[in-house]
Image 1 (cartoon, rainbow, N blue to C red):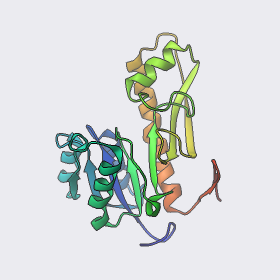
Image 2: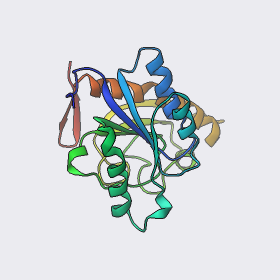
Image 3: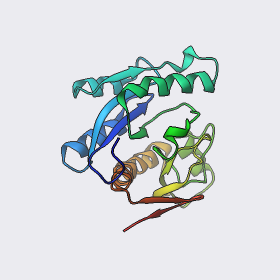
Image 4: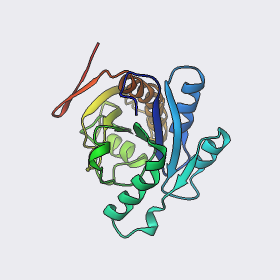
Length: 211
């Protein structure tokens, strides 16, 4: 495997649903703005539409159904065993709804995007519209999104990039989600580019962006 900064990174994408984040990656890649090679799209549900998006572009797919496993440990082992033949250098979670136990060889090599400004409104149960409903209920004036490295806890790993979004008086969870998702489409590819360029240095809970 090539280290970051030496050519396109072999990227695997994990998803559980429609694959809109994956579609954004494809669009960025086709525009020459995402220097990766898509090696696999793996879903936790066989009916995830993201699998169809991958097949349309000739990207290999795999399914490891979460409901087929009794706990996080056996499920995680099955996920990483399914990925191993594709030798991913980077893994991006894109609407992936399952907790994972990260094996040592993948520590620091998995990214996720969250629809809030972590560490606020993160953790178990904070996903999708649940996040935006909580932000509005708390009376927040700003929200946003966060790309972070993944560890063994929900929404907990070191933060790479964040982008703020104003919360408007007339906002509903739907209207707020629309603007947050637009911000996600900007910063997730940015974080991938930083990773591939070898510009991220993790120092404890902080991530330095190198020149």
